[in-house]
Image: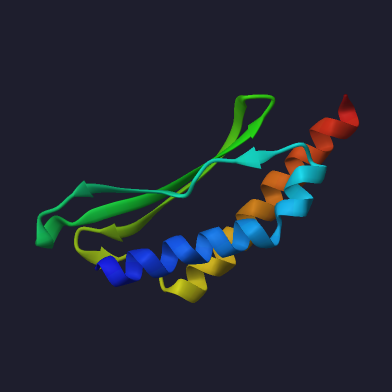
Length: 102
């Protein structure tokens, strides 16, 4: 389980670093990639990742998803990468729209 969690955590870090310039341009910065284990029993093992996005010290969005649910992988690394890419792109688009409206 731990290997898959580390792969997913690294994948999220890589994607955030890849789009850091776009996040900066949108006026956003992000927290560390936080991995939390919600249940340690093997048959119920549940873990999730959360990343908080900020503008001026205020949380404006959260990227949050389960890595394991009830002892099973929630998604493959490739599926997770695709979802993370799309979600971060939407967070940037939303922030850019808010910037344009102000």
